[in-house]
Image (cartoon, rainbow, N blue to C red):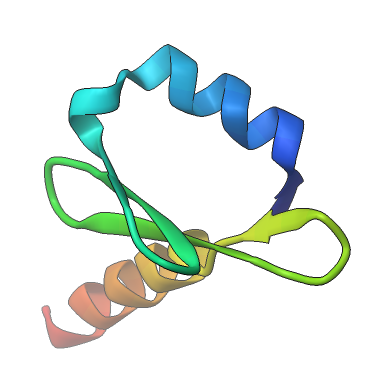
Length: 65
């Protein structure tokens, strides 16, 4: 999933600085379960694999039950 820099800035403003860590090339949004890493690409977009990771973990839990 990718969003524009403006959309990421608005999202970060809403969730608050206490839930955000900044790296050299990424923004990490710290959540209750795990952090979601947003990485900049060349098109002024920020992308995360968090939705795919969450989906894979839910699938793995279902298979193991």
